[in-house]
Length: 282
Image 1: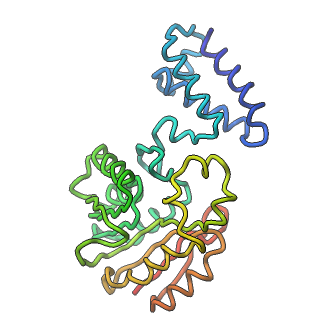
Image 2: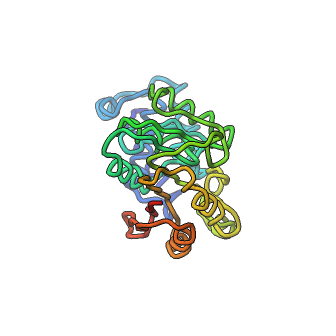
Image 3: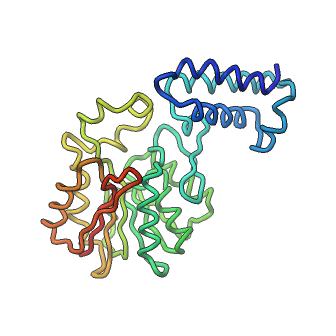
């Protein structure tokens, strides 16, 4: 069998399998990435070797194991244990939420906010994608808070792989630092899905991504409310709070910020024109 035969046969089979779930162009890219990963090929090598015969049977079996996982709706990022986010690549596994493109907005806003290196607090750091990119792009020092032990291990691994231990300090804590301190900026992509919304999520999310990173509680506002209620204690007078929020959550979040006596409240839309980032100042 040639690499090209494997590629096109797999595309044809999976296109039928996922006929109502994935576009052909998306599947084509997924298959290409899985082949590159399984056979240890770079992007250039994949195209150069398409007419070569497959001789490594061990790697071929590895590719087929990847395909079975893809058929089970497991996200590609978990299969290859890697996800690109903003300017960097991150190790991910089933214990961390897969970084989303819309979350890049909070990083862009942080970069615009920080004119010079500053002190940043990242609440619910997950894989460390927000913390690490902010540190790399702005030179700031970031305290990355993560409660879940398994997730915390992934956070520490990504900090180490990016060689940024002096700038991003991981702390195993619940929402806020163990020691009181103030920051120029607080960022958070907290769980904001309700229990009811969780039931309706597609299988590739509900069956594979960690529930604790997505579901806040019955209403979906439980964690956001906790963050807003105490954020001013950890913000400098000139500081700013940036929180990612869910679909149709703007009215409630706006009221929570007003009740907590925040000012200059604003909301930034994502690429689908949905209010996605809440911004406020003490």
